[in-house]
Image (cartoon, rainbow over all chains, first blue to last red; front, side, top):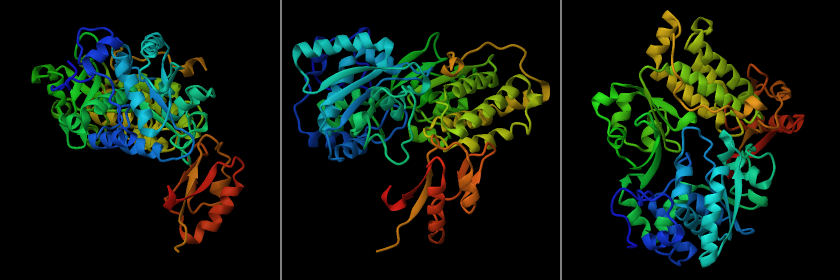
Length: 422
Length: 72
């Protein structure tokens, strides 16, 4: 069977299979069709596919921009760095369906006139990807070359210019200033570069096979197809699920009113995303546009349901201090601003009487860092704090009137930050 | 042919907060609590483009750039 999936499950079409090897992959999906760059660009553009790395930028527009630079052959970076601690969908996809990702990278290379693909993944994914590449090389199915580059284990390593820096062998995992010339024009080895998230590439591998109309048959409006989400707090352990864009989040997670009562708030988009009230999350059509209208973002598909019995302000303080430590340490406003912001939310969490200016001081601190870094790291932290202040306003009020929570267990995954060892 | 329009862009990695820009060009640049520049407004008014150019070349870190608005 090599037909297009008819249901809402696409990338995760082989449940129960741990790794889909090349034979099983070709049996299920067939070979990539041999079509021209123009046909692929048209299909991806008409599909409405947007970037699943977190920015949700239209993929067709990006591919055309890189294809149109017209100088030396552009480079494709299949980006699976996934530095976000609460996200696991890229690692899972790389492990489970490496050939969908590699097919997508080959599709992108063909579409933009490139012949070199760099697979940029965490150390743990290297063995699996190299095995998949060896299978492909034995069959001789690719006309582009593949290299694997290890992404450093830090939050920013998947940021576009940071990935390019890692590949170029300079300041691995550290963003550069691209305000004047982006990596699309000048990236890997100085060439025009397409950095695309691995899940986005996997979707394009299916668009190349089954076309734009098939892709658009699931989804809503400008948000077409499905999305992989990493869900924490719904089941005993985090789970990766595939959600048709536009589905209500409550429906996708099987939440009823009873289950919702034990959720204090919902974090979308991870530590650079934003909190929304549980009631809104239940009915939210799961799309980037809907999430943004609530001041949040679905980002790279992180969904965290914060249970009752956990102090949300302690969670916010832990995350903001981690994010401060994960900054690249390059831009004055971010270095200074995130430290002050982290200290302020720590006051609110642990010693609320020390928070000068009260909770109202926090949004103005956010405004001081927003838009002022070389990358969007400070903007993400600001959104995380702004939305937390709004969603947990009652809890903050309780801290200010009665003092901090007496005991609380840590809930959100917060690794030791790179900054702690710097 | 219409006159080119510009905005100011700070390279926040290059900038070390010397503050020369805010002194030379307070019409559009102020400093944050840590001494780093905040650009107020987007397009540089036509009458201030020359001053903006002098500010651009005066930055000891070459962290300021005038960027054509119609080309980005």
